[in-house]
Image (cartoon, rainbow, N blue to C red; front, side, top):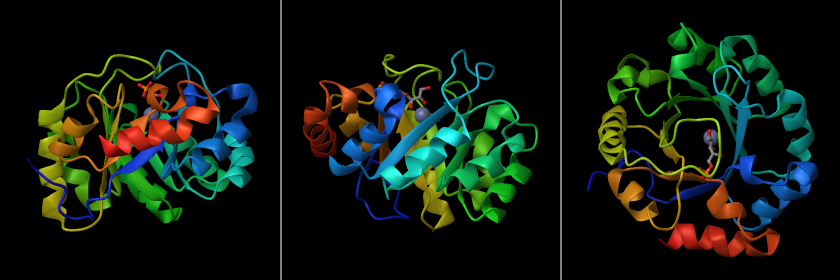
Length: 225
Ligand code: DX5
Ligand code: ZN
């Protein structure tokens, strides 16, 4: 079992609001906050980088008063350098960009840090761990996609070898860097993902299933497993 030794071993649960009821998004965010979420995972999609559309910075700004939890903003958009300042201004705490979506990843991570935000890189399933090598000093989070991004409710792809490789890269940095896993995470696979070295579990359908009265139990089930 490899471990992300640079940080405490508490697992964080990050409900993805992609699976929430968009008609009542503020109440949904407040409900998962109250149910025990550590981060609120916010999926921004542009219909270009991924074949789906969600929302942009104005909606995140409107959600901000509904929770004091960390807003973990996952940008699935092309040329994110054009919009990161807007997301910073809207109240994002962590801004994660896809390494595949920008030609100037190193510069963009520095820009996010200069905006006073934590900087993350997300990797699609086919993108190797080694692509992070030259940006490790600029990272606060690595987000390993275990589905091809765009939609909630997809089948989890087992990439535990990649998670372990990244956990070792993080351990070598000797500072707190979140290792987050996103896509098809549920009670059945959470333990193996954590054993591989992750410390943040993003979960959409596994948290939001059954309606608001089930959110606390769904989060607790993930945490316990
Ligand atoms: C997929 C998103 C995920 C997704 C997770 O593109 O980045 O955050 O909402 O949903 P589940 O947990 O249902 O796979
Ligand atoms: Zn996501």
